[in-house]
Each structure stands twice: as structure tokens, then as C-alpha cells.
Length: 113
Length: 115
Figure 1 (spheres, rainbow over the protein chains, first blue to last red):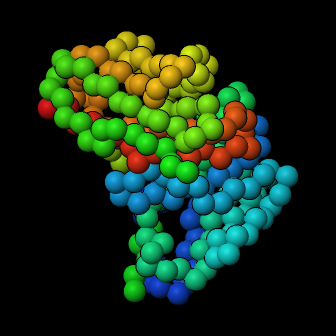
Figure 2: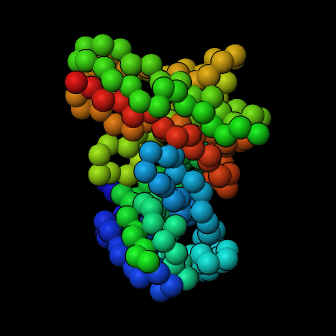
């Protein structure tokens, strides 16, 4: 039962353009969502989050949008830079309130110079 | 302030051997989570511990796997009698307190290869 899904395994974007990474979820009880970025041979690093009471959160070049009715969130990176090339995971804490995270499968972003 | 530390970074074991993975949380963090990433998949929760207590082990395989977080020292994930299917990257994360709003900080992972 995949509660958090990232249906695009990979995305390739030209430097300077917008990258849009998508994530769908099935559990309407999720109250918080996070995006993590992961480079090869490293652990995931926190990027940006959004509470379910908001529909948008912005931090510099990164903006996350939440559409609760569609159970969909997206991460926008503008402008994309080659250093953004990494695997991006969306995640949500499960409803048990232990803080454990449920991750999507990840999307590999390649930003071409 | 050092980040989350994991060792070893790479571990090679033959089938039937034991694997011990260590995780030292960030200073001041008393909550540790272990996740496993199989090839081409996302991270899957395994176990959540606080000092001297296992809080949630719902993601742990029923056999061969165990975890601890003693009063002193790192958290240990132990895999007995490893099989090839245990080959994966194992990540631990720490946070200062539990709850959905707290960001978890991840270590660099231990890549286990079972021959």
C-alpha cells in the first residue's frame, strides 16, 4: 500500500528553466509534507515542508504547492541549476504521531547546463 | 555541531554472517529512526527508538533484525544470518523530539552488500 507516490522516476530540465516534481498521496489524515533532496552516497537532506493548512510555501528558489482536494503536491524549482541535480523524495509523517516518515519512490532530477 | 554519523559507510558480508550498523545521533537528539532503501525504491521505515526504548518496530522484519539505543553509545541495527535480499542502504535519522513537525536529520547511510 503505497501511501505516497512519485510517479515520475526521472526528469530532465535545462539550466535556468523551471523544474516541477510531483507527488500524490492517498491518506487524507496526513497533516504535514516534506521534500528531501539526496545526492549519491549521501543521506537525504531536508529541503522544504508544508503544513496541510496551507496551499503554498516558498523558500528562495523552491516552492511547494499543496492541493488537498486532489491529494497532490508539487515542488517547483526556479531557476533550476546544475547543482540541483539529485533525487528528490516527498514524504509525510504517518498518522501514528511517532514522527516516522512515509516516503515516495523518488524522482531523479537532471539539470543540464 | 556534528551531524548524524553512521558507520561503517560500506559493509560487505557473506550469507549467514552478522551485520552491525551504528548510528550516532546529532548532539541533543534523543530520537532515532532507522530506514532501509532497497535498490530503485524509496526509503522505508524500520524502527523508531528513544534512549533504552523501542517505541515502534512495525517496519522491522520479524526475524533476524533487531535494534537498540542504549543509555550510552550509538544506536545499533543488527542483522543476523544475512541474506542477499538484505543488500540495501540503511539510513538512520535523528530528531530532538517526536512529532510530525520535527525535521529528521539523516546520516550518510551504511551500504550493505551481501555476497
